[in-house]
Length: 381
Image (tube, rainbow, N blue to C red; front, side, top):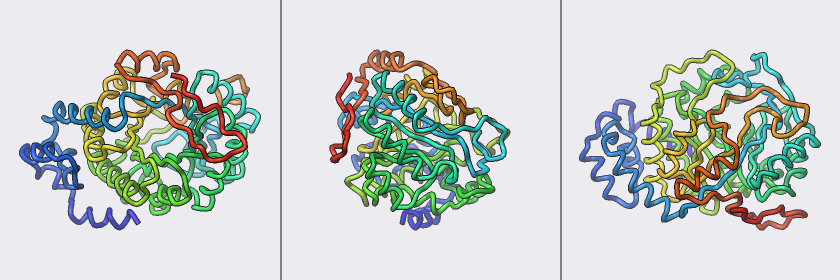
């Protein structure tokens, strides 16, 4: 299991070691084609900051070599915002007084139709982490209803068992997104004081359960800003490397979400994740994991997303909402999980990508598993 690797690296990479690397260490790493975990640590260290431009040139070349200039587009659809957890950094916190609701299957279909009308063919389904309100049977009904409209469906919900992932895979789920939030167990316990999510190990092992269940693509990461960002970025990348090596048939991707305003008053004691720090994380990810996808959400501002796009990004959300409902006139709209920063429409994001010299892809892959309805998986470039 990946947890065993984290223990070994915690013994080899104490927190004080981030300042033990030199510029010469960074220069040596940048001459290598295949990087080791120790090299990743060097690229995340303070000594790498003066080399970001050099790292960016190499990262851009690697991305074009492995992914071309295509940027895959997707959008999230929140099915419900009921939650059983007390995460200190999230609007869905069980104790917060927000508008809670859950889409019926009919309402989910209306939302899906509104999203599909924009041309988007990759949809990510989300719920709050409440098994009683959003159980696998409910998810299965929504997946079956929405599958005919889209080339692929992803899922970002609470951790499931291997059998539950298999069940949802069979009805149409292609990808799973699950953030560990932070890989620091002490901080994890502090920011998850109550609820099922408090189980650090069960969450950590969920991406591997999804891989073993046949899921085609897994997207992981940490919520940057909860704990020391260098440590969380290091273990996120090691986790992705572990999954790539143990499940070579699975497409592994990393996300780089930073904390955004939400309903609550949590203030992280961790060092802030500056724009320069986010750039360094993305570049280190790309150089360490040339074949991994890198996903950028609307948590970042329009200008920041434009600046980050050439550095290794392969997927972006567009026209996103983090509320339950809102894409169509369902009459059922719940509170948002967090404030988004890039509110541009799908056509505006498409135009931005083209202006930057890249190709926006509404559908960049189609799972050809036999299904009753495969969906309208044609390219709409």
